[in-house]
Length: 309
Ligand SMILES: NC(=O)c1ccc[n+]([C@@H]2O[C@H](COP(=O)([O-])OP(=O)(O)OC[C@H]3O[C@@H](n4cnc5c(N)ncnc54)[C@H](OP(=O)(O)O)[C@@H]3O)[C@@H](O)[C@H]2O)c1
Image (cartoon, rainbow, N blue to C red; front, top):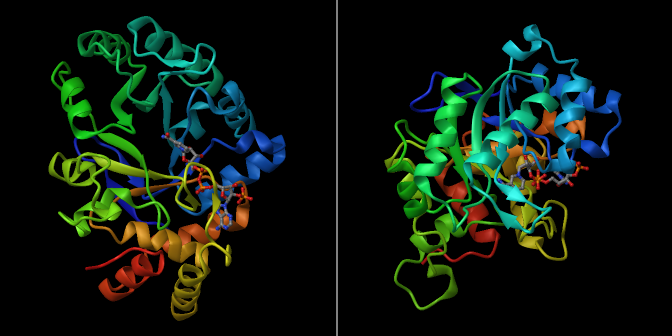
């Protein structure tokens, strides 16, 4: 079974494994149903969506596959995101767009509320007061319980937070063994090497200081959707060797160790799993509660090609 965390400043007790639904439109209806049911059987109670996933198809398939009804809805927390406009090639945090997006999301998901709504990527043209107005409409109408962001840096959060009457509770960010800028610069602080470049203004420390739950997206990928590091012996020979060794020690798969490496971090992150395979959901959940030792955690970090000075 998976571990549960309290999302600070909410009443949500969420699994630290999240089922990400960005890729489920690759599945048939029955395959999608099996995947969702397996996730629930493994203890996953948190489901991540976005209006743009499969141009809305992923949300539709999800609710159809699970035959969404009030009894099922009660057993899960559902999150979606908005603010990206692929149709216009821009980000859009206008009041009108946020409210319209949520209305369409709710229709596709066949539900009348979201547990959490995230703004998908920071819009430089954001007017915080306008976003606050949109959130207020959504909150008072009962359509969204809590709000968060994704891919935001600390000052972008503060700028928005200043206009809001309630706390932003989540920041979804890319993080996994092969994508660690959030911790690299802190480890190589003040050195004349690339690893010390602070690319996100210390977002991990900021989120911990302000009790914002981090959700790690693309946990098995390297780069921006460049590929999966697990099993890639050409690009990541040392990393795979190290992970495989620990998988053997703990009697789990390498998938579980990749997950455990993320959950070992004291920020208490949730891991957003993007797999479309039932067995990989089960394998990932086995990593949820493994507590890697400090030495093991660092060994994997170094095996990924990072320096520990
Ligand atoms: N906020 C954002 O900006 C943002 C951006 C991207 C994604 N997300 C969210 O994060 C979720 C996860 O993203 P993602 O799908 O890119 O992440 P991911 O879980 O790292 O990658 C999924 C891909 O890797 C493969 N894979 C997964 N586990 C594997 C394993 N153990 N061994 C080998 N291959 C494996 C999957 O193939 P199989 O299906 O064959 O297993 C799939 O192609 C999405 O569903 C979405 O909810 C958020």
